[in-house]
Amino acid sequence: MIQVEITEDMKKRAWAKSREMGVIKNSIMKGDGNIAGFIGEEVANVVIEGSISNTYDYDIVDNDGIKYDVKTKRCTSKPKPYYDCSVANFNTKQQCDRYVFVRVENKNRRWGRAWVLGWLGHDEYFEKSRHLKKGQIDPSNNFVVRADCHNVAISELNEFRRSKC
Image (cartoon, rainbow, N blue to C red; front, top):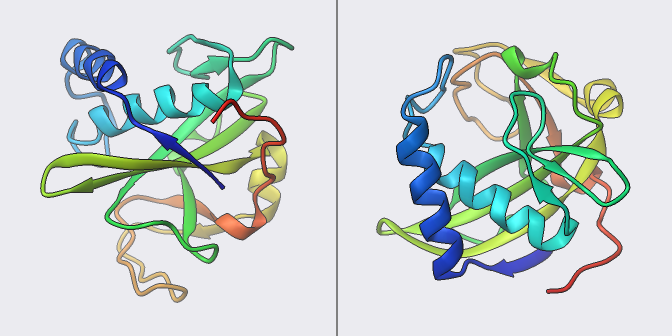
């Protein structure tokens, strides 16, 4: 897990993209998570050092041509290894090579720290994941599932080997 500073420039770019996008179809958070998602892309790219693409299938392409889709969750504290990373069921057909998972801290409506948690290859993610249905209570954390999804614990992710952080 790599901690990354959320800069003012990252926030400005994320806000601009969020306003431009509006509410997307199938949004679990009804558009409220857009800013977190765009900050997550900015944070992940500090580690990946690629180019942000913002397609339906992937968000970042690294210098080797590997396509990453960034999955971001908001949090109020440093993530623990047993916390889950999620991919919503309607995103399982995305044509990315890897998923990268990010947590962004948001306390009292202020963005704080961020963490790049790690990555898994597209197919490996679904092989390792637990499938959960909307309305189901996840037995690992008692969270009521908001949408059908696939979850993997942070401890099961691959770590990034390089970082400018």
